Length: 88
Image (cartoon, rainbow, N blue to C red; front, side, top):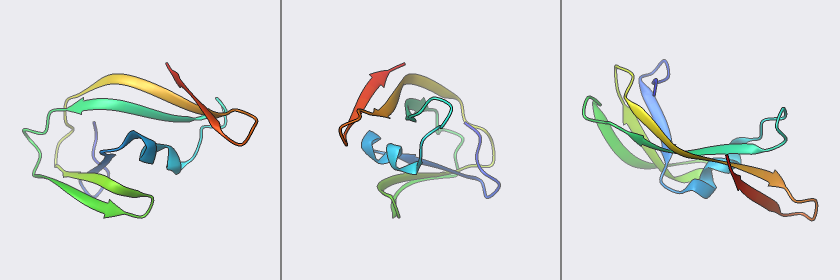
């Protein structure tokens, strides 16, 4: 996983928090991935709270970190005011 221009990677410790950041209009839903990241070369890893993600994890790193995608979910509206969740 590549850090942003400030050397940061933001994650969440709670998958439901990851769906608040908007949907991909091309698929009509929001995506969320469960990943395993090797943080052995990270400068720091800390739990923080940010707007929209009270369970955020902040990784500070100068280099991309090896990442394995374990699963991906998509959340789509069910037409009744709720959502359906599907594994991709």
